Image (cartoon, rainbow, N blue to C red; front, top):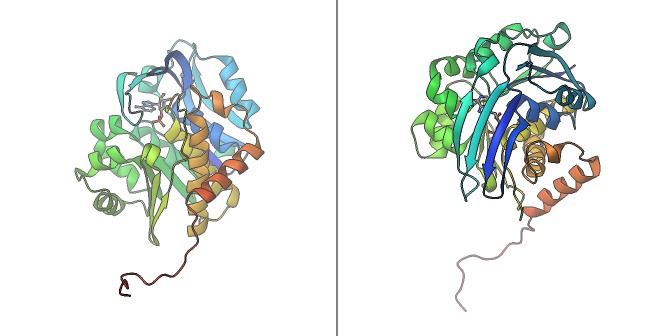
Length: 313
Ligand code: AMP
């Protein structure tokens, strides 16, 4: 197994301008593992759920080639719950409620067969738990970390310890600004990279994503969609496609990183078309390939020399 994912398995209650879903399957690890499973299998998933977590959801993950033996089931506990409301501008959302439940006392134990994974994705979860996972990995080659405002505001000191130990951080633009207290994304990126990660991805919702590395900056567009139903999980689905692609490719080169950003963006574009994980349940390789091709044409142009500024007759 060359990819291990840790994060939340959750029930989400979501309100968007187009509808409402109660107790929909969600969680950072659920989205990441499902998305990554389109590129590499098996994917190891580590997390915790309560006795109320549906067996069908675990069966679904298994059907996607996800090894769920690292999901602890606390029979007398309640699964993590999150509730959010999206604005008319779907890039904006308010968290209405976060109930840690079983997560509050979770002590992750990585099953033996996952410890040697070279690719590790520390999905959005308490930074202290991300550290406990890292401590148990024996041969990490590329560690990606995600987080959110809840942890940036709630436990930044521990998050800094995580950042010092990861290769790549994935966050959105508002989180980058929050983390550095700087409105400028380019300066924020430099400040964050000084905290540890040599690679940084800043997601900008429907405006695409920026990849910062020692080679410079790469800008990926977002797929222009007419119908976005539910952005929940888009960031995690991006992370899953990104690390899934890299785990499949095996080598973390600049060109693979750039392609991985496009694969992540393509997977996220599917995720937002339906509620919860619905769109990620049965994608075909052909659909993914077609969307990658659409990304390629979206920002392709033929360069042609013209003499600029030479307007004299
Ligand atoms: P995203 O839209 O990519 O930011 O991810 C949304 C998912 O993250 C939802 O399915 C939630 O269950 C999960 N989530 C929300 N808040 C947290 C949190 N504080 N820690 C971990 N996971 C969370």
